[in-house]
View 1 (cartoon, rainbow, N blue to C red):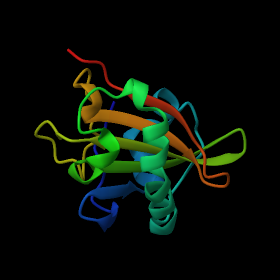
View 2: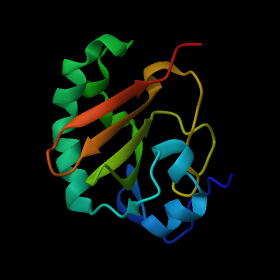
View 3: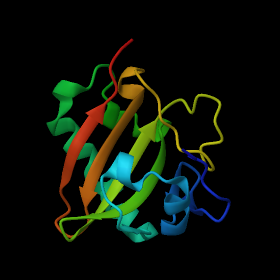
View 4: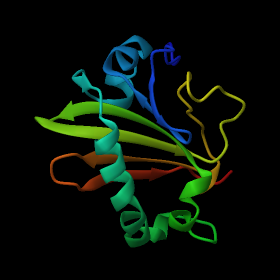
Length: 141
């Protein structure tokens, strides 16, 4: 499995990176991570809409978050990776958040970590409805 993001990655902000469809395909993550073979490249505007709605969603799901201050108040400390995919005809964005990149070049390598608590979490976002789903917060070790 190759989790390296080629250097043609679209960067829209110093804290986040959009993984282009071609790069996500090369990484081979579609079937095992996203359970979808239909990938697409999100736009910076779509990411900004996701980011705007994320703090409220996290605060409504605070029972799976562990530390204080709460994650939604510390989002500026997180780096992010975004991958577009389709599920059931819907355009979705997989968002990977992490406060420690574990020494990886996170702009070029997908950051996947076991444990680590709410320093690492992932969520899916439906572009059309603006709704989040599948919030996954890493366990504590």
